[in-house]
Picture 1 (cartoon, rainbow, N blue to C red):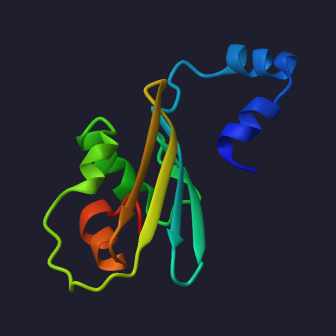
Picture 2 (cartoon, rainbow, N blue to C red; picture 1 turned 90 degrees about the vertical axis):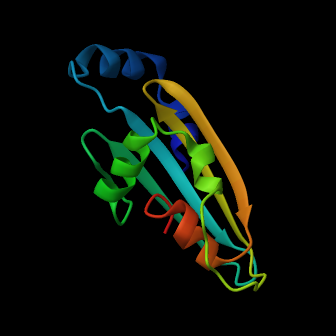
Length: 125
């Protein structure tokens, strides 16, 4: 079940207990990252938590470091030099969640996996 849907599914009483029991230093980021290779139909999803870094993401430290460096400005994942071949093999990326308690949402279609590696790694692998 996606992160956002799980949060809605928590009963109000249990959510109130969780909030009151939360430590003074909460995570600064909680993101769900989805990568969909259009041609192959392969879909990968990761959960990323930052401070402390963790989740199901294969490189939470690298991903969180990059996000902290830009205060999670996800638009920066669209741009940058990508010396990639001009092969159209689209990859769709969607990131939803929170950073410093502010909602974040990003969606972009990269022309190929090489572009994802150069522009969005290590947040999206």
